[in-house]
Length: 280
Length: 207
Image (cartoon, each protein chain N blue to C red):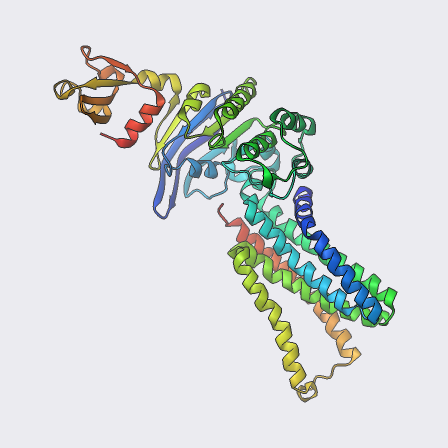
């Protein structure tokens, strides 16, 4: 299986922030969710992939090519949606269509118009007067109208209502039916990602904690509720996070280290993230 | 790249009404007074300012970050602004020339000399403002614009106070023609250098 994005030992230092030794691979035909708290480095990672910022070291390959040497032809095959809509706010959908038609060689006006109609976006209203949801839908329509094989979405669904988010998840599911397609999506709304993603990459304080198949991750960790006494029975190395409550503690523990007599439940991605972020 | 220029023109169209009104007004005054130097000057200055305005629209929309994910190189982003500048200056030049010929207050040579100097001013204007806009952002460049605008005014005031003959310079049609002949190619070279500087600045920019 070919990979759409491969990141190898990538480093980037800002003042007050450091992305350290990032590694992950997004295989073709998959959706990867990028999760992590605010400021963990999700957007930095995406900007590095798109060469909007320069990496200090490491290697990034996008669609089989070094990302610093992405040709126009390769960029045709990537669709990007950011957390905001970056179209000039005085223009309307029709004008934006005209601009994009003259930028993308593979622009498909019919597909664009179909998305616009499905999303119920007005043709001649200035983008400035769009709601946040409408703006995001416009960006998504644009990203999906030039035959992209790789979609990169950075917090694209945040701030949308559940109906609109579900609509977008459906689009992604459709998109991924073609097995040469792939999606990298970062979001705060982990329940959304849990629904559609095949892979989850968790980034915490500039470090990638894990990047694996979602199902494997969920098998690997369990949540254990126990009191002080029972806690002692668990090898400390296996404990990835603790939350103390009035009636005992909840622990995130590696599945094979959970003592048989303790009851445990499978960890969902959200608690995994919360427990990891808080630490032991 | 064509798409980028279309985007700028569509963006600027919003100011089109006011600009058109200004041109008609000045044009009418020019025709009545039999002198189109004012309208030509106004159009050339506008042509010199509009590329920065286009840049300010991009900045406000954070367009660049998005555009760079499209099949557009960093160099093309810069090139499009310089081509836009050329288109605008070219339009201003042609319209002014036609107006000058229509009014016939000036001989063709006089008209061309006036336009040549206006061409130099607007080209130099763009050459200074665009790299500044890419490097410092539009907000700070606007202050620079005011300074740049003041320089020719100060020069003229100073020259008016001092007798130019004292410096051994006599303003004759001959010297003006020579000045324009040297100034125009120099302005074009300056424009090219400015372009290279902008490309350099833009290649190192992070979004």
